[in-house]
Length: 581
Image 1: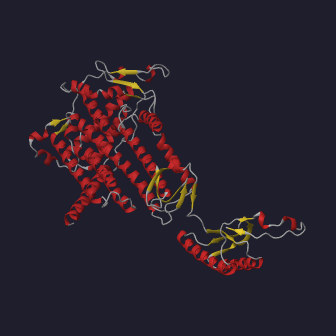
Image 2: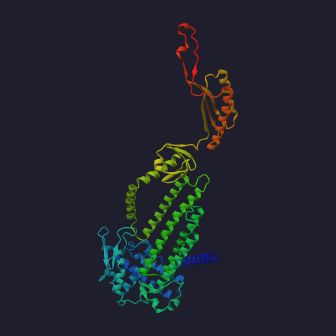
Image 3: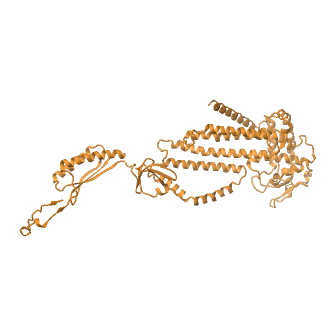
């Protein structure tokens, strides 16, 4: 326990420091401080001449910012360079770069273009065409720097349509152009030397230049456009971050993964939230303080973007489940009822929809074709739906059971010709325990098509009994018996007064038939059996006392030899002697 608490404290302190560093670093990306003269003036991109002039005018500002930062690294120095970068980068068409890589690739392209124009011969600005050289409605106009493939072209569509920018094709090939021209001599003075080399070696103000200078020479070797020591630092940070997240996941994991309580989901939710905060802190630290470049910067940007997307998707799903499990904890919703399962289904659907939206956002951020992916998912979803007709039928059956609510968990029901107690109502099937303790799993699609009789939803239990009396029972005995039976029902508080009937209903072939119709005021089956048993015993005692007992099936046979037909007066026939057997 002591080890866990210590490790957790270290993790919390580390994350706090990282976030503070990230906040301080991120603040360096703002304009803070008092802007210099013309810092906010927009660059003119109305023609190839205006765009090239605007770009060349930013070079002195960039050189001054770099010289000042080299002399005294500080947050203010980084702010100044970022302001120059943000202005200068507007001459580049970055529409083909994914959003996740936009800032870093735009900066790298800008530094390479700075160096290229310092190593190649540029024509006189008066020789560069202006806006009057191109028709507004003509084909896409463009101008290429002589003896190069660096092109300034008019943007056809988008928010910057009509502006003349260094084309997206040029931006995509700047690395190729730079590697070809980087050994050429500078044709104009460059006080800062190679801008590209400065970008590779530069670090943020948190990392002292003296510390970098003290590192072994082999660690400053450039690999993938990044010094080796920076790559090692990134690997160390990635390893520590992964260990921290794994440790936090194990520490926050509920005692059993089958635990679906709100507290369990809240513990699980801590991990994606921590991952999101970690990415939030690492990204500006790696971009500004370590200042990764080239393929290393692209790889880390993609990894962090994917991690952030997964964290948001994970958190969206767990949040939906947390809310629903908190609602299901209400005493009015049984845990295994159809209501609870349908709420969980809605939560899963909502969580997956939220997670899908986060993934789509992340895919767009790294440049994946979201529209094509969604279209592919639609076609795949249709194929899955056709292959899963039975599953969909059961799901629709579950929705029908939810809409009609013919049964709940714990109800005793008759479905078709079978009886049982409902133990579980799921999204695909329901489990029913019969009186012999066997459990039957019935698909909801089939259950929804059957007639379901729910005995547990009765507010009263029917007590209906018809019994027979012998024909020898006199009318007075019948009257006394009927009155006694009515008084018996009315005197029992467990029997409803409306209706409580005792009637002489028929003369049968061998008996007189009496019917009792009443309701026992209970919904408990066992309790109603006890009341029924007591009433039947008292009815038996009353019938035996008043009418001498119940009648049994009998038959009367009349034999002709018992009569003297010649002596019979047709007006007064003798009563034959019955022979019962």
